[in-house]
Image 1 (cartoon, rainbow, N blue to C red):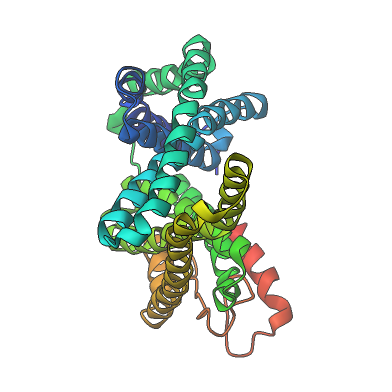
Image 2: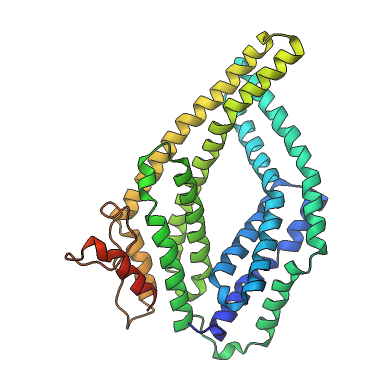
Length: 359
């Protein structure tokens, strides 16, 4: 891959421009309305831009790349707690509507009260974050760079499905797929919350990367992207459950302490505790079901050779290169995908994978 290949540069500029165009509007919406959707959309744009910076890192010098990545990371981070509370409050309202038992309402209402108070405190953080963004020239440089490329490049001689872009897509997707398949054993352990969380992050990264290279690989990626999003959604819901499972026991202790300090005893807290514990039990049961759903989906993808189909789409653009065989994760769940034959010893799997990456 050439560092300054015009096909790669144009693909990068096109992608960044598409992501950045709606950003000012969403930021204005946060300032004027503070809507949860606006906060969400800005964070998504920041994540997609950072995914693009990983893919197109060779288009920038290391110092500039580091600063760009940090700028968008900080913008998203400044909105994270507000977004988390927005999601949790929306869920609590749904949970309350689906559990009309009066004995549970005081507990659910107490959680809603505390989370609403916490969300209000985040408004100041958001305001500071947006002011910092407005003063920063760093976040506008990427837009200027993209526009300059798009306005000066002669598109009549460009083919986005050029060998350089296909090679970049191949190496980038292959690396992420390696990481994802290596996490398959985590699905066999209900308590491996860290492994499940990492799987969610990498699945999201895979989806964003596939979307980046859709102009290169074509509509054949649509079903792959759709199925990857399905797994990402399930993994996200599972992570939401884990947040509640980790937080609610602490919440019970905090609220019981407040009650004791105010009343001198904890009797008024008993009816409140019932609703909180019901929510906790619900999230624990839902987490188990979601994990089973993810495992079933993974097995379905294995059976349908889902990952093989993905690599075949890429290999179709590299007809002169050897087709990559992705082994079933059932048989090699603790190893990275590799070129395998029946006689390939396990000790050579990773080495072969690395050689294929460097073609």
